[in-house]
Amino acid sequence: MGGMNTEDNPIADPVSLAARTVTTRTCPRCATVFDMPDRGRGRRPVWCSGLCRRLASAERAAARNAGKAVTVVEVPRAHRPDPNARLAVPSMGTLMTLFLSSPVHCRQLLDTLIYRYTHDTLHAELRIDMEAFAASIHRQQTLAADPEYRRATDDVQRLRRHLQMEADRAEDRDRELATLRAESSAKTTLIARLRAELAHPTVPMLETADGGGHGGPRGTARGDDPGVGMSRQQRRAAARDAAKNH
Image 1 (cartoon, helix red, strand yellow):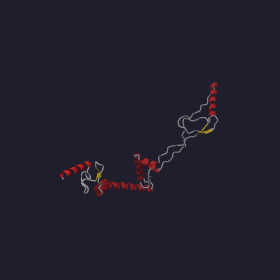
Image 2 (image 1 turned 60 degrees about the horizontal axis):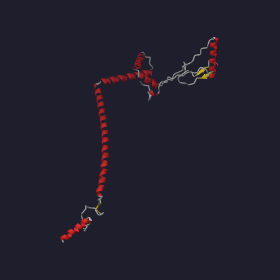
Image 3 (image 1 turned 135 degrees about the vertical axis):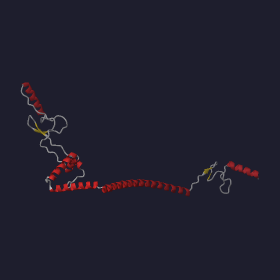
Image 4 (image 1 turned 90 degrees about the vertical axis):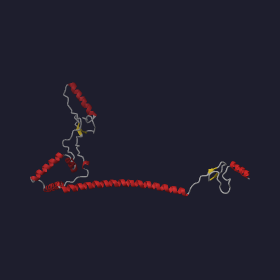
């Protein structure tokens, strides 16, 4: 309804149920008022001091021996709640959240509002809000019963699903495009490196049997000297063959 403001997070303000408790006690022997310590489990102190406790114990023992009545002292097991304690009042947002979570209470509220509206016992502003609320519900019901409105609503839903599918596909295409760009960049770098190696080839030096080296296959001539690149035995064999030919 109008006039009701919701908070951002009403659940964050829980209902506080901690009440004040009695924190002082009167010593039953000397009538001294003392503070009770904040303890966990166990019995709370009855006497203000150890001296009063020992004297009270001695008095009880003497009373038993003499046949006299013993004074009964109630020992508190825990702090007694203060009957005048007041609980913290929760915020309106918390109350509204708790109320709306109960369909039974919501129905009771609506019945009460309808009864007070029909008997003209509502405040003027609340009456206007109820009329606007009823008009909104009637308009929604009228639109829901209109076939054209239902078809338009279905078209809007289909359009939303289509747009969502297109958005998902666009995200997939963006990821694929990023992958292709990374692969293309890596291939471009590799091609540039291969071109640089082809532009400046490196010829390995071949070592001959006599410790020399040359840049071509063994036994091939380099320059005008046919013996260049040949071993000593090969040169001698070549010389003998030349002598025989002559």
